[in-house]
Image (cartoon, rainbow, N blue to C red):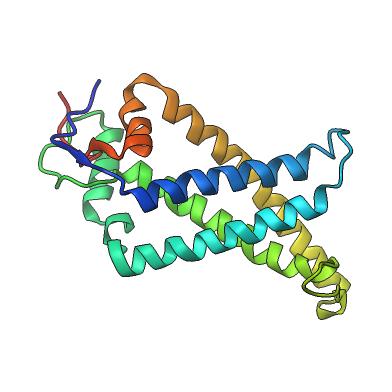
Length: 200
């Protein structure tokens, strides 16, 4: 069944679209520089990886500022209507009586999981910068014990695999016909103002 999303307007502003595509490029670069050497493609991947990681960290800081100073966090925080939406979905019934919302319950859940995954990757990646030499700092792996480094590497690796899965899911849902309007809105800005509405 198709959703009736209501009116069409500016769904994503230009700075938010630029952040989205910059983050996508950074994630692809990080994934390629991390996994291609494991698959046997040899190249000097470390500089590319840490530079993309620092760029992603700066982009996330910009995004957090946009959320707190421009958008507010309310539109991404689950509320009682999101729980009711999930319950309606489990019963395969309509969504009558639910307040219109820019993001539906599943979009909010995906965002929360992706945000937590990226934050774990970023935090552990920033710690791992202490283990490499760059033009800006000298390596100092003594900041953590061997056991603590083991935890950092496990968390970083597990979050990397989860982010790869989430990236594939995100691309899949962006390309299916009933979600093309969301993809177009991330390119042009124009799209459905509400993701949650009544079904027809």
